[in-house]
Image 1 (cartoon, rainbow, N blue to C red):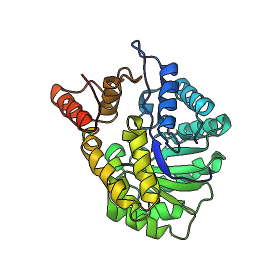
Image 2: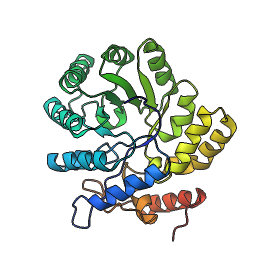
Image 3: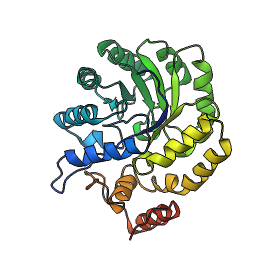
Image 4: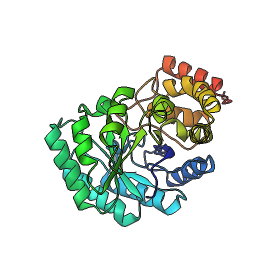
Amino acid sequence: MKELKGAIPAMITPFTADNKIDEEGLIQNIDFVIKGGVSGIVPCGTTGEAATMTSEEHKKIVELAVEHSKVPVIAGTGSNNTTEAIEYSIHAADSGADAILVITPYYNKPTQDGLIKHFELIANSADIPMVLYNVPSRTGVDMSIQTIAKLAKHPNIIGIKEATGSVSKATEIIKATAEDDFTLLSGDDIAALPLMAIGATGVISVAANIFPDKISQMINLFEAGDIKKAREIHYELAPIMKSLFVETNPGPVKTAARLMKMPAGPLRLPLVDLTPESLYILKRDLRSAGVNIE
């Protein structure tokens, strides 16, 4: 893809009452975020509950996204099984996706050498641009600056979704990859504007599922030099950005989507519905962000 920038929602996956993929609902959600001005979409990421999908479901969602999206598709193709990640990545390339998002292997806890070999083999096997995904809170392993800098030199590896929320780490990544054609995206909504101030180009966003217009406006305003108005949107959305993680993602954002009458459906086990306390917080902060809910 030409540019890795802007508001890029990590799409929720709507399910039917009998736990099947709600294909029409997914298409509706894609249309909704595109109308809101996003610059790309990510199907089959963490927010999309990819870890609970069958191989057939995973591939079908990528195919649907590519078929119906009018903006670039960055397909989530990661796995803790390198062979499976390669399979998903080749499928995404063959389906016409614009790039892939590959998470660090979870549960295995590979060494830094293992991470390098994992990502390099995927990048060598699938002819498609790759975005690394570092989220140690979910995977139990954190990519070092040295590992990221080494991988940034691979011609197929174009950037990273950095989801530690650390301004310090993002600073070191940007500095270490300054001479490479490599981009940093925030993987955390609340950190998006601060990280753009030091060189990030956008965010792979949970909140953009339900506020695609506002997240897009915030980023566009910043890029246009209107820092004051961008900051106003950041502070307006800060409470809901926080409460979208009041419990494990994507529980809160799928609940928010249901409250807003968007296709969402149930969560797949082992995730369950929000507690009454968490639901109260979520509803409160949705209202503060201007959403009319019962």
